[in-house]
Image (cartoon, rainbow, N blue to C red; front, side):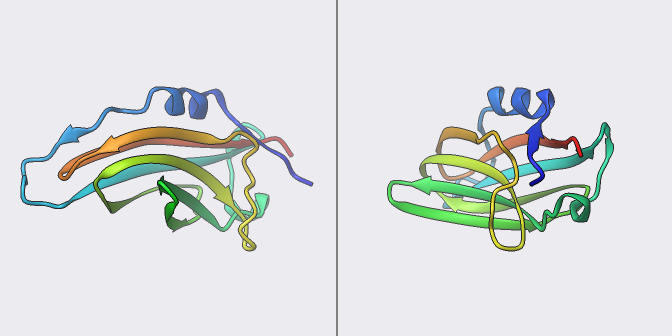
Length: 130
């Protein structure tokens, strides 16, 4: 089975998540979460198909409730979504068509989001050696 290894860039991005910054629209009741990614196979840009990936999944857990957002996999990309304010544990995964996680290192962060915040999780590099 192909085993994914997160590159040092992904680990650095996960350990240095950009802090929330307030947006000017104080009436907005949601916060925005942004994420970017790229795939590298054997030290070169890789395709999602070559590693069996279909989606980038972001799971934002607040208590016992999960918000799950999937972005279609492409060699590099980004996405964003709005979420209610609160304290969330956020995980980023590279998944296959059956929902199996392909990255071997969990990317998890706890964030306290308030209305109008914009949380940029950074760019995660999913690196594979095949």
